[in-house]
Length: 140
Length: 425
Image 1 (cartoon, rainbow over the protein chains, first blue to last red):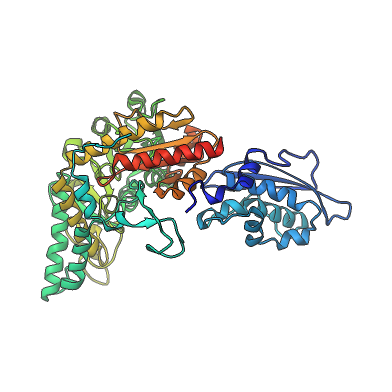
Image 2: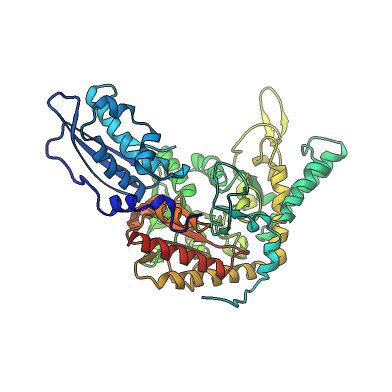
């Protein structure tokens, strides 16, 4: 057993302590928020699309919460640049754990996937695929 | 660091009664029970959530299922009579344990929450209305807070909250202000599951009675950890759960003064709780059975009896001393770090739990790292979300102690907390 915690490898801690693309956009193409009410994790994601309205040009995030949720958002903000909305739609939980590079314990998966869920729901709202979704929640 | 700590109780021999305490952890969590990947000795400090179960209690369950399993109160055959006697005697045992008058005042429920809901529905919905108030505290568990909040919404009554001071104690001047002639119910937690505060529940009951209000005391964290005398407190209702005091899940206890329970209508209807039934109407069974509709928690009642026997053998005064020793030790050890915030009163004046946060480390991250050290604690809002909002923390880590815990285990906790601090520094 790894004393010093496998889940908190250097990469996670680095993104948690120095989040990339942290902040809010002035004029995003779309924006969405989400939370894990029981943890208190919150994430807001702003997305700027290319002129083709399909390719993600730039992503920023802001929020508060545990290292897993915030590092995941930071890494995802880098990963999403240049990705199409279809590719975003196809991102699954395995893609996220692969991106994080660590094994996420079952109880913490909702922290890890919060940012992805927020980005996906934001895109769906932008496309009009869903309505009436003020806030994304990744509770069990 | 402690090496030769002496305890008010025989911890070493108590630990022998709890097989789970010798298991190891650290491996695959999708496989229930110890497996070969589990290598680290478990340090179980999540007793505020649920306690572990000694062999004596499991034996009582086995004896029941292997020896006299039957439904109660409805069979003339021998097994049913044996089960009925054992189940009824469990009520007597609980009554004696908290100094109630007898089984008439002891209703078995599913848990503390259901006991709270029983009174809220059976009494509150009928008694409360616009112009009435229910007074709770800012440190209520959701079991009481959400229940009264919603019953007040439905009845038009007002809910008020007694505020806490900077050390996490109830502001009793504020209590005296809030409890007035509009007040019909004062609902207060005996020992806070987050702050560790031991509330002056006798004084709260007196305040309630001065205004002809009832008092409901939530004893979920109190009955397992200290002597409780419902008559001395003069509570009208008092509730607690079996699984936090060495018993199984699925059983809670509602104590109510006999004359009050007598005047209340049933909460659940059905079998067991009736005396006679026609197509047009029904009459109710005597207390406490009037409130125990359907096949009741027979196994759990019998097991709770065994759990109380076990605790009584140790002596609740001794249990309390042990709890206080561990709480003070943990408080002092964790206080040594400037970046650790502990919630609630000082170490020498609290129940056996310590909720805390480490600057820059989310409670869930902390709990994950502690889990790597085989230390089981609770991380979250502990069913006190409004209190956590007030404390300015979405979550906290909570270590809670019981009769089998040692200062060595707290040293392990502190070692893991220190590791988390350094990892996130």
